[in-house]
Image (cartoon, rainbow, N blue to C red):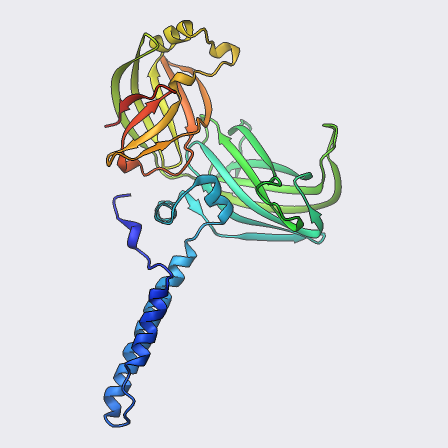
Amino acid sequence: MKLDWGNAFPKETKEFHNKLINILENLPEEKEDFRMKKKKYIVLVAAIVFLVGSISAYAAIKWNSRVVENFKADETMQTVLNQDKFSNQEEQSITDNNITITLKQTIQDSNFIYLLFNVTGQEDITEDNCMNLKIQFFEENANFDTEQYSSMFWGFVDQFSQTEVTHSREFEVWIQKSDDFNSKTLDIQFTGFGKSSPKAGPDIITTEGKWNFVINAESNDVVTRDINQTVTIDGCEIQVTKIVLSPLSYQLYIDAEGVKELEKADDLSLDQLDILTPLIINAIKYKDGTVITEDGNEMQAGFDDGLYYSKGRFSEVIDIDQIESILLGEKQVEVKVK
């Protein structure tokens, strides 16, 4: 992400329209010197083709509005994530038994996969509807027996995200990858549409079918930044060793000895499913002084090989080249990122 993509594509503003009007109004009306007039028209057509072509390329990279809402990526970062292959907007659409399911967009990195679908049928669809689905991960056409994900959530968007009730509704799938994830392909098969049971019983499937989607599950490379900084949190010496970053998520590593002292000091225990909130990234500070507040979207934490790790999703897409430091916990203890 070393290129400045901020101005890579022209914005669709009135300026574009005004430029074309200005060109047209200044064309010569006299019939003499026909060859010069023809050349000017050729230049005009070339200008229009260039500008329209640029705008078409710009429009092609735009994200779905639901994805923008979830990841809070501005147009510059949308372009970056498309270029770096963290985002894929190649649609797949399948119709069976009068229900059409369309894969709209995929967002993923080494920690998770987010999939946005649209489901269209012949009746109103609300957040109380459901889809039966099965997932499989593959590598070189061989099915894995081991789990390739730690957790998964799916469902239709709620009434606050999509207030209007129609025959069409967006459907989201969130998959947290396991530590040993190494799949090349994700196969998602929807097998039925229906309604969720009002009393936490089995779903009521009203329409069966087969909607099968094959999705590239390979993610882009992450960036590892060595830190090796000791900070004091609640009277405990905490040695932060490194952070693994993508624009979408992070993996923070801390020496386990200090973390165990912090557990005792704050009367917390990971074994009791407590969350070590003083070690969760509370904000990101950029080199220009901008501070981006985080919502504490920690996905997983634990001890491994003498280290404590915390894995989380950023509240908004981050320009990792601009990070100066991370701020931990409500006290926002600053840790410099090299």
